[in-house]
Image (cartoon, rainbow, N blue to C red; front, side, top):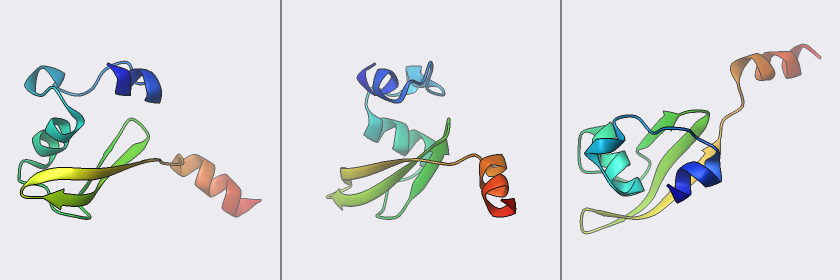
Length: 76
């Protein structure tokens, strides 16, 4: 709930299947996460930075610019 509030996301996909952000990553990746694995959702990129014994230790969340915004920046 804190993550959804902070990122202004109404609902995470299949959120009944996990309780943590690490759980979200494992559910979306369908494997044990490794550094540099990433998932894009709702305008954000969630990237695994560090893993410690099969557990996500650090995760980077980055806002992704919309493709239309990218194109308008290039055209201008």
